[in-house]
Length: 259
Image (cartoon, rainbow, N blue to C red; front, side):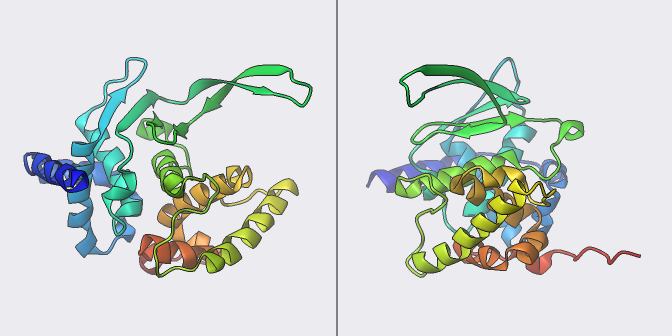
């Protein structure tokens, strides 16, 4: 009952939002990977973005003023992975905090001798289980090549859907956990070996840090450079295509052959 009421309120709030066509176009022009969407999916993504904003609370940190264009950009990117899954995948939290550039999180750990070590961890984003998503925001001229902070952190939120942050999200009934593991485990081992060997990988080497980071990095690649992911890890691409119910590589123009 409470879920139905929340969805009704979300839809009503979205109905009251007015976004001029030129604003959609301006924001989407800065997200070129949206071109991989079939044209009939674009209105659905826009509508979901408005419902997302009606459901979440977005705050700027360290004096950052979050503009309407920034809100739409974050919402479009956050909703892209769940376009055919549904916003209920993000239902257990409301907060998004946006920092101007990367930020520092104080951390500590206890070693095997019981000694507490404290350090500052400079990060681009963080997703807390049951809590907010924290994002860095960069102007266009500061954009990080090959890294999509929003999709990465929201992939972590999907990973948390079954209670474990392990690169193994809750799968729909028509997907096989065994097939997922058979695609991801050898790909992760291969990627870690390539990174350990010092290879300059085309995919973000941060994916070798942990299976959860591998899932998040591969999710970034699925939407931003789908042809590259399909070329390097076709089984992973296939599983993500079934999970997200999208096939962006189908619409990506292959790179021109070298002259």
